[in-house]
Image (cartoon, rainbow, N blue to C red; front, side, top):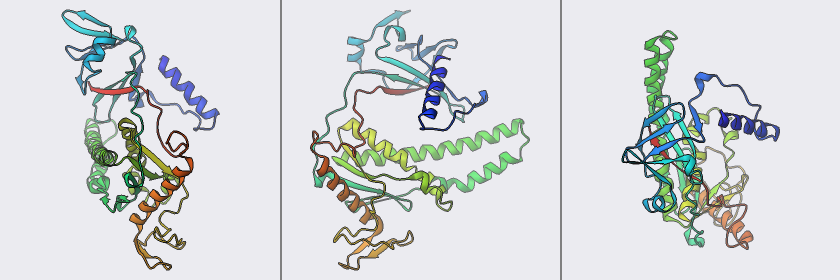
Length: 345
């Protein structure tokens, strides 16, 4: 209840400061997560967690809570029946909030927010050769300034026929019936599979890009405005560009790499990267175009990726006087932030 009150207070603050709409009531049956801020315990020997008013719950640990050396030197441990138990109230400096969540497929997850007081590594130096421009799109998921293209797998489109069939099956069932619940579970499992496929793809691509380059330049996108085009809204949402960029940014922070963002209105697709001519009449259907000035033939997406890199270099050189970081362009957190790990209940 304490955390629920804090969340409500945050929602009202966001509303009064113009960051969100007025908070709306939520039905009790629609609550799929709750937070525990104190009085929980974790058994490290026989993986389970004690939650207030719930009791001990067996869990499968996704990864170690802390490194063994950190536990030995910082964490207060208790021996209970020969098992090692750590109490939040004794280690509140390092153990933060526990979030218990339930997916539509009835899977339960427990996410434990921890603090290890370890700063992110210093940002590595980079130059033009180690900076990569990335242009995200629909047909080609990501075009790189190096000339490489990454195809869009379109997982939602691949499963759309089966999703429609399952949705019709749900609609035909009597509301409140056992058969309707079973049909809803089948539909939820397929939606979860599509989401997992998309996340897996994004994690692999983002990790590859961050590991192979010292810095990455990306374009700021008005995704909300783009989805107003109803012919493209579904495939844009399936591409989940915001999620992809978020993965690139936090992986870059963790590995000491830099992410540079160019402006929202930079005409990256319409400018010839060879001579600088601006082709103002370029339409969305034109995937290739020839520059009237220098006669260079351009692939629309690769040209945009190269221009994104050029715009980032230009802006970085202007603002690089502050400890070598592109302030205002780099989406970089300041480090020393709480980390989290997930356990499966």
